[in-house]
Length: 192
Image 1 (cartoon, rainbow, N blue to C red):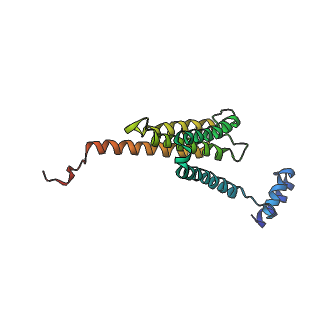
Image 2: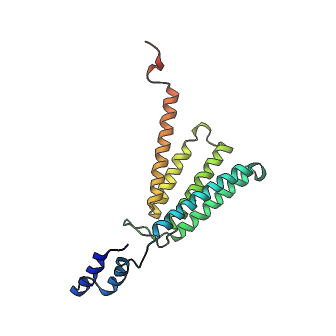
Image 3: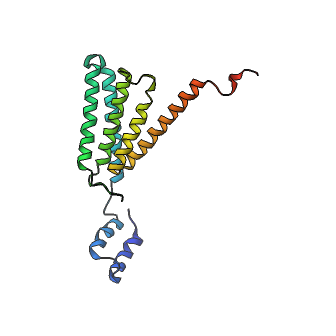
């Protein structure tokens, strides 16, 4: 980003001793427009890459269900999720109550991919082999708790927002199932 005012002010700050010369050099290059950050573009590319992988997994399942078989698909998606989560948990910094910046710029996205694959695997298992039957919404609660735990351990704002939205989805499904079983509360349009 070019900023002539900042470029003119940096040498004055160095002369007054308010800014160290080694810190001034990269700031001056940036103010003169010599440095260009593509961090936002890389983050967007990684995010869409994660979405593309998850979308590709869903298409693979849809197109090859009969040929591959439901158990093989469930195991394969589970192994993919486990690989992503294992990689991220091996590289997570030690826990601290302070904000910890990741040393690897792809860390959050592999964590997100692992969580999304785990959720897809649980949804697929529930659809093909309904272990919880009518109480399927507890998969949402389980995913929100697991995602929340991973978000806290890995200090990931992306995973935390996913945990909160999954918890809200579980609450919405739970409330809808209770009101659905009680019937309409407004009398159903019948006169009294």
